[in-house]
Image (cartoon, rainbow, N blue to C red; front, top):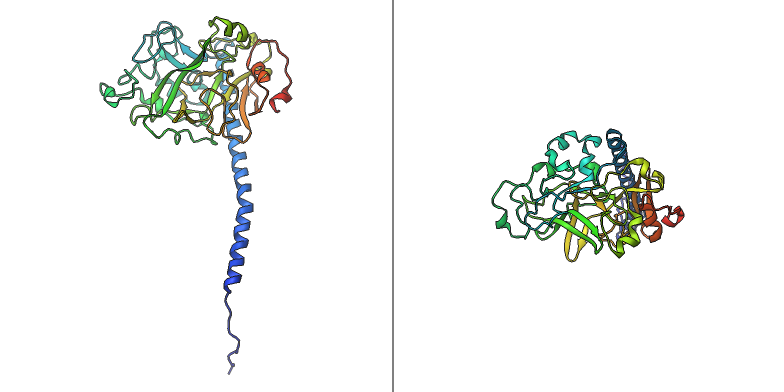
Length: 348
């Protein structure tokens, strides 16, 4: 018969348990930044891939239309003024370059669902955010949106190629007073919105977001006159208002000219904001690159650490630092400025 051992089993003491917990906490503290870096690296790579697809789509569009890139945004002098939209020549339809590229990013069905007058230059089509009731007014009073069924539901389509995974554009616009920006221009007086939709459920809240826009260069309309235009019109980019830029006309070279860039959602003047793929056409470089964690609705920006991604006109994608030299950034945005710049000043 086997005798029972006289030894008793001993569990962890409180001190030993605390030591183990402390070791686990240290390991988690060491691993968490590494996990976050891996996650951001993956998001940055996905963002780069998005811009590569957009750049390729731009060239496929040009291959279809006599080597001519799509318009940066469609601002027709023939469009009617509706509600609170600005009058001609900026009354509508505000169609973005990203909408023109839909068939070339495997979104033909979305493109087909949008009436063709939205894509016609000099169209009599009103602003897309207003032209279908209840978008008669944008004064912010819900009762004014009761005389119709809403804008075309197709504008609510979420397109992954147009969304940077580092951003959360739908989480920044939660209040009814927040903005979903669907068009802006730059004039001799500076940058400003032509149009935005308020964040009402069933009205603006569902609009498909975008984290990318065409690069207008310094000014978004070559017809602008005055001192500002005289000083800065040489930095006109590829995707300005009603542009029809031919590839051969980019004398600075496609590898030296920005075509598309990132813009994050965020908060400005107490309001959340984000952009739409249907209307966020071309953004000026007038206000440079934002280094603000909340971004800026006037500037290129991103949630990537230290950099913003840009697609150049040759289809390549490059990261430009948020502290890049401003004049060099202007030169990279211009298609025919003749300025030879040092890429190292962009942080590359």
